[in-house]
Image (tube, rainbow, N blue to C red; front, top):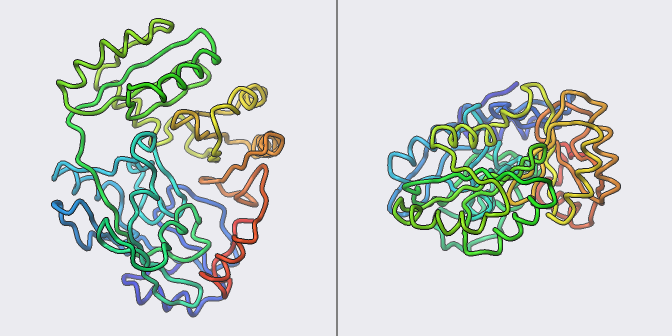
Length: 359
């Protein structure tokens, strides 16, 4: 494995290699092409520029999320999309490549909404700049958005620029328990179209439970809670103490509800497909969790045969799953249709085919 200490060294390594697989802190351990040269961006670390008054920062791709959070917290700021696996050592580059957002995406938008600039190395070993270092930036082609969720198949991300938000002064979490899954799904719909303005909304299907998080000024939250509880008479609500709530949200963000060696599949979906999907998933008995008001499903298991079964279910439901952790034969499961635009983007950003595709 090559672990360069500067961007030029990384570019030279790409130019000298036939094929390249990029890695960071390996918190996700995706499928790897064993014949490809390994490029680790872990040593490309550190904050390059951070101006709290501008609400933006620039950092190398190997910088850990925990280092970023510490710097932002000291200035009362944060990344609202709750980037996962910060406690495990995840990096900015790996988070972008895997396209991961946490529960906070519901209210504020996801990773791609906060990434405003990036530098990456393309298949020719050239260092390309996309976006900029200010929020209102319209210069150049929007490469950063294409890099989100690309699994490093379009290039090696080496530097990133994000916008940030003020950190909320207070948060409250309500646990809502329902007699069945249908009622829970109905309530999720009601909450998303109400004036509740949830900060996060997660579904634990095996318990028919919803976790509802609110964020803002302490006095404002105190005044809002009674009205919200009034809307929840058809379930069993419980306001969770702060320490317990922090633990529950950390468990979600760190995937602690999975086994340490489990593969993890990310499945974008719509709330209307949950009931049909859920009845089939429960037959396999894999760990799973619905996030972002049932617009994203996480599935985990230690058994490879479970992945095969899940792929068949997703195929029938016309859904696609992306492997974000676990070493398997491929990274895309379920329904998948390769579009012409995919080939066009790949040809533009990696015409040499240096970075192996997912399929």
